[in-house]
Amino acid sequence: MFDRITRFARPLPLHYLIASPLVIVVIMNCLPSSLGAAQGGKTEVLPVQKAAPAAVFIDVAGSETELRRQLRIKTGVAELGSSIPSSRFSVAPTGTFGFIAPHLLGMALITQSPDLPLERMPTASNYFEIQKLADGSGMLVGFVGPDLKSHLTPTQRPKNVRLMLYSNPSDKAPHIVAVPLIKLLADRMPTKLDPKNPDSAVLFDVDLQSSANRKTPSGAP
Image 1 (cartoon, helix red, strand yellow):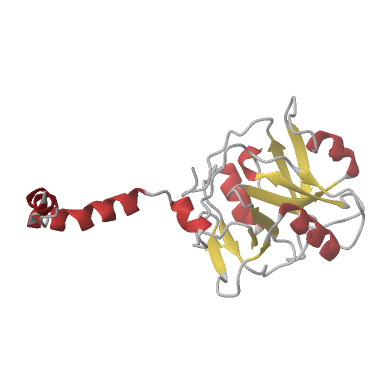
Image 2: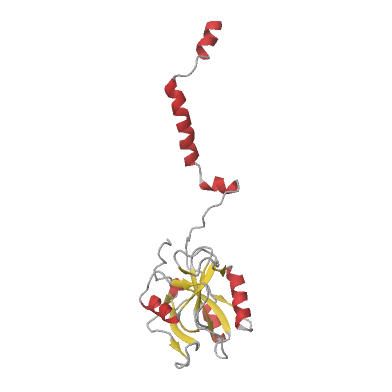
């Protein structure tokens, strides 16, 4: 009996002792990353976009500052950090917003560019706001007339909508709206309402498609 116990208690060969830690390392590498998150680890939020989001329409009156604040709360975005004075949409953090010059926005939509240059703070009052939602999708912010609410708010639109999107509010366009970039098409550049004023509000005629037909930003699925 003692000989049998001794035989089973005999030390393992050297190659087994070397292989065991390697097996443990392989198993740990195969564990899902969500396990680390469950234990308090930090995981990256990838810009996954399964479908273009619906337009967001704020149906109240107010100052431009207040309307922008309400829209940002509803879409869940905050300004780019002070350490990021400028960025490109594809690499900007999710859940943030930035600004783009009207002529750069026009060229991007006309050429169907998959990426947009953003600034943390606008250098002119007529810059358009671009939001990058938590899922990585992009929204263009502007101001429209009240008659467009019924055409913008349905999740499934049966037809395309021609938008007269203004960079700033006015009597004609008192309501703020965010529309999905991936559904926008343009065939002309934005125009200033007062060509002699460099800070003049800008009008941008764009088509809001019923389905997504633009490219996603570089780096996004």
